[in-house]
Amino acid sequence: MQTTKIVKRYTKTIIIIIYLLFGYQTNAQKKITDNLSGMINFHSGYNLPEYPFNVAITEDYIRSLEICLLKETVGKNQWEQIYNYPSYGVSLFYSTLGNDEIFGREFALTYFIKSYLLSKNRLKLFNRTGVGISYVNRKFDLQKNYLNVAIGANFNIHFNFRIGANYALTDKLSFNTGLSFDHFSNANTSEPNLGINYLTGYGGVSYNLGEKSKKQIHKIEEHVKENNYSFFAGIGGKHSRALLSKYFLASSFSFEFNRAFTKKFNFGIGSDLFYDSSVEESMKKNSQDYKKSDSFKTGIHLSPSIVYNKFSFSIQEGIYFLLPEQLE
Figure 1: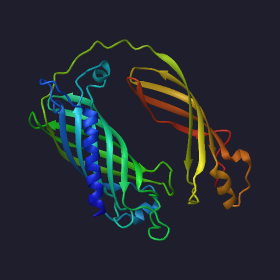
Figure 2: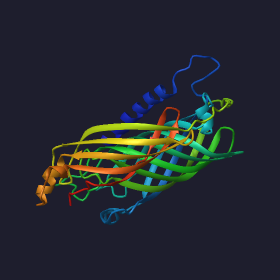
Figure 3: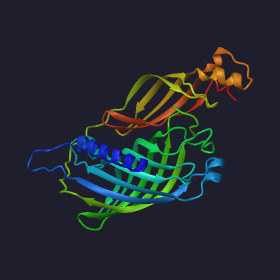
Figure 4: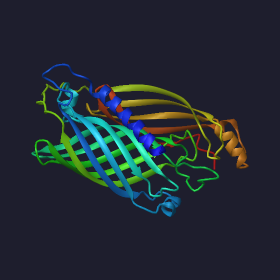
């Protein structure tokens, strides 16, 4: 009964989001279904064996079902043309997690962008990146579900990355296949928070719901390489690894130098300062000597970024430097 209510709630939400994303067009020459397609995929795969507990607890394959609506771009600006006319959409995702009693099952609603790497005749190769919110019906409980040290909260952030191929069987119908990497965790808002990563192969079909518009072609503006300097500050709360119920203040400050090498790619290097108020209590519980400076950490990072118009997506890789992690 609870599962049925959750599915109904997600269905209503996805309908509202689709309307807001794709808009309502009153022009008789353009329909809301133009360049819009529906897609369904079935997944099968494995939990990735990152931790020994994961291997011991997982007792079955991952099986997933995905229903999507996606909109093709037609070149309204030069960025759509630069990225080979990507698609964007929403996905309603349902998955087993390898052990129904301990890990439970996941429902996720994600927004994604699908970029085409190669388009030749009826074949298209693509990658797809999505992020959204997920609900898991089983989480860690010290009395009832203490073996689940991967999931500490019902609501989590879901991230996925996919590579695959579309092959057009007809003007309306296409076959999809590929590989999918999925991860979800709660960003340390609750402990434990190891999260779950799984890799699946998938297959399915796409169907064009309306007519396809002719692609627009623009003159691409010449790129000017330039340097950018940025300062970031963040503040939030976290649980400690000791599974304490209260939240601790956490904050960060970062400075970054960034070089715009191409229209699509930037690369940066920066320095970081972190403050974590949970360190004092955790170190004392471990019988470690605590100094005020132990709550601070410093580091350096590299930051490759993918740029789309005024939006950029960055992945930072860094190490602690000068003031390292003191908590054992």
